Image 1 (spheres, rainbow, N blue to C red):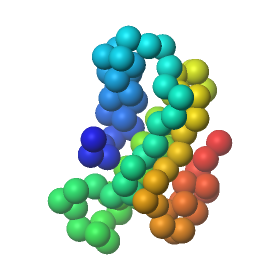
Image 2: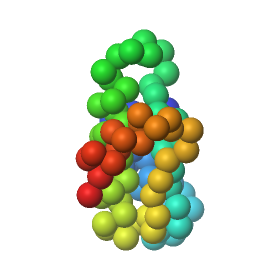
Image 3: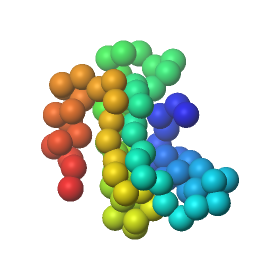
Length: 86
C-alpha cells in the first residue's frame, strides 16, 4: 500500500485483520519512507511518515499489532521517527 494518512494506515490494518479473520498481526512495517508522485523534497513525506507511525503505535497499544517497525528508511528518516515515537 502507498503511504497515506494516519487514518488510512489504521483502517488498512483493520481491513487486513478482517480479511485474515484474526484479531492481531505479529508484525507491521512501514515499507517505504515516501509518497509516490510527490517531489522528493516535499514536506508531505515527513508529515505522512509521522502520521503513519502514530497509527502503528495506536494499533500496537490496542493489541492489534504485536510489533511495529520500518524498512528501507534512511538514518534521517529513523531520527524523525525516534523524535516522535512514544
